[in-house]
Length: 496
Image (cartoon, rainbow, N blue to C red; front, top):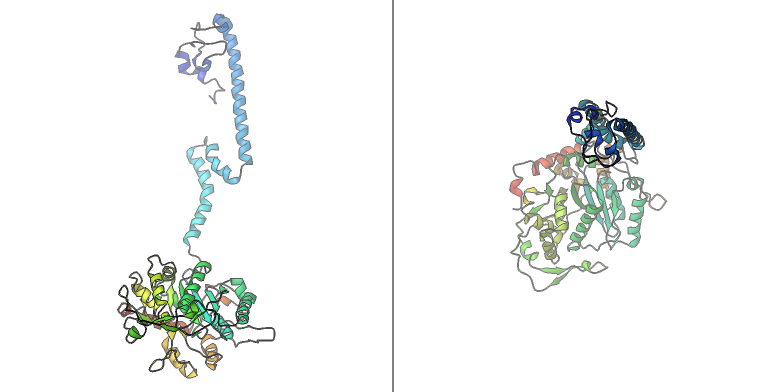
């Protein structure tokens, strides 16, 4: 029809052979374009003026009508074409491309498809390439630390935080309610005024301090509080590690992160044993109440009578209070979808030294996590013989034992002991402290240098946090991981 100026249907074979119009109602009524033939002598069934007219008079009238209809059709086509062009010009580029397949439909199918898909294929191919390429540092894990302290621990907590700091990690720092309000406010102010901490936003201060009694369940409650903060505000991280202000690292964070990148992300480091010995009767049966659960001042535990029977629904385990837990285990502990974590939390609320049994009993009574346990707390600790309530304080004479252990952390260190300076100088390559309390520069402490510092020797500007520069510490830690994870004894030391 378009190629013949609107006359194609009139000269089609169907229009010649078809019957004259039927039932016409007035001039121009019916389907004249399709059924009228110039070779017909007379119309049939006509009615009105058109039916009474002779064939000689009808032909000029019909021809005039056809001319008018051709102009109307041309005008309609012109209007449609104008609207299509106007819409194409005013629409957005994305809408234009999406409508191009219909606008260019008169082209050969391959040409139209090539045009539209060619415009779309280039950005899609680039996006697909970007999606398949892993982001920089995707193989480097992230750690989440809790560093807790009490009265008088502000400065050594601050020192430990800087020794442990890496912009890739997350940190929760906590001074318990025994610490004066002024110390807790000072800690919050130092974090807020630190250029690096403010820029990275990965140091979280527990504003509402908890009362913590070491031998009671309040230490477990404080640990779970930090876990909840990290799950809510800490973003992505792989392991949770709890430390105190009396702990100190024996290697750099670059060493630790490098070694953790070689460890499966489902391995939990929990020192444990099912052989409780004397603890079965002196810890499992007595019942205590920790005033820290409800009091605002620290008080010692008090005993409750009578004693209770040993549990039969689960087996008790004991071990170190210092752990390195996977995110999977932390989520299970906080959410407790099968109720075991909450049941054990209620049981250990009346258990003396519950921090040395809660996580051990939890992980060893959850079949899903038993195969993930590495029987080590990643600490070097010296105990007296026979062991006392607290470990022996470390000194310079213990440096060879610290190095031989391969552990990334050690405890317990006295405040400002010379052994800490020896670790800074010999193991961390950390600049000497510039802590000038009282002269306007309170809390200025040097960071441990790492790949994240870039070319900035003061580590005040964060470069690429996935760049690591491991040193001898990574070799020592790697040998420890070989002994406790990558060895034949790994499975034989789980929950025994």
